[in-house]
Length: 548
Image: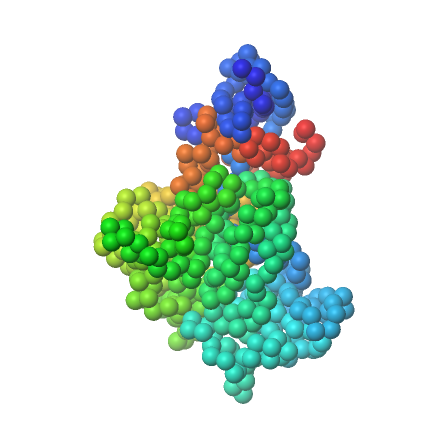
């Protein structure tokens, strides 16, 4: 037999307990045929041989919660992350520069600001945005994705102050009671719906841009955390955009798509079949193939931690009376969970505050009691603030938490300020979940923060904020555990562990080649590790150093 590719002279970290290390991988037809040492595969005939000169090979990374198309869209917008942005005047200067390049009356969109990192410690106002770009419609996106600020022209276009504010949303006001331009949660849809829906071709282009960046970071699989109508607005043809990107050869990574719960509806069915909410034709979790597949439905239970809208059981630090809020009544949350569960969906619910996490667990427990189902793997996206008793409930119910260690170094200082010292110990747990026997995936929530999995693994291990302060050292993982989270753990969160997540015979030939072994090196340097190449389906899809 002649195989497609033999990778040898490598340091292979398999994430497979049956054989943790190897030095050679035989690949044929996009699958791993065998692993071993050079002597084991010395008789194999190959069409192509890749000598890695000792470089490290790990399973390709899998981001279990990201916003791929939105990240591609953000690449075209004014970047406002801190650093380098230090103050509101820096934001206004960046907007003014872009305004000079755009025709009068056009939309001017900036993304990624964080008021916690600005010198002023507050959001910009509509009057300040008016000053920066008086002839444009300005939309400023918060890094969390749960706020935006608009200028006066955009407010008028959206008729803010005239139309009803959606439930679960807030239009903030100044001391005089007039809207100040800040829109919270579902209120953002008042403006964003003016920009939707996007053309399928444009969305497909954005997906292609994101795909190139992902491959350069060693990502071969990701789980897109919300398509279609999400929180009351969106792009109804977003799945078609992913299909087009794939058809045109621009989708270089495998994608599991979470469908916004607002897209579901009752479907006529026989009396013998369950009465639940689903997509037309009964489509639900699992439909698709190894490249593009429908995953969970996505529900939003609450808001943002650094924005202090997450639903908490006690006041945010220094803000008496502010405990955030749920985006829907608990009875409605239970109803939506039950109807999706009845229809066979895996459910992924955004819950950050401890009150929201508890409410979601209540909803899952009620649905499972009424309609028992083995190995459902319902998820809690973020699971940001989780009390000890709810860690135990997650384990007992078989729920998968999807926390983002990536937040620790980029927005960890803001999270600590919002929670105070006592509750920070409950925040973005990692080791607590593993110690309780819970599946743990790795994810970024990109573009909320930078999405490189190596940065995420670094944060899982080192637990340091951007200021260098310890975050939750007791939650730190070993490098091996962190690597497993970003590979096999993420595969398990999407029912994919049989085909991806480790380097073993029969699995997809998706590999990431690194310049050093992150499991044995000084953990302080993990973030500086280089991705030399990314192999997807047995083919080199990204090659930074001319390996082929």
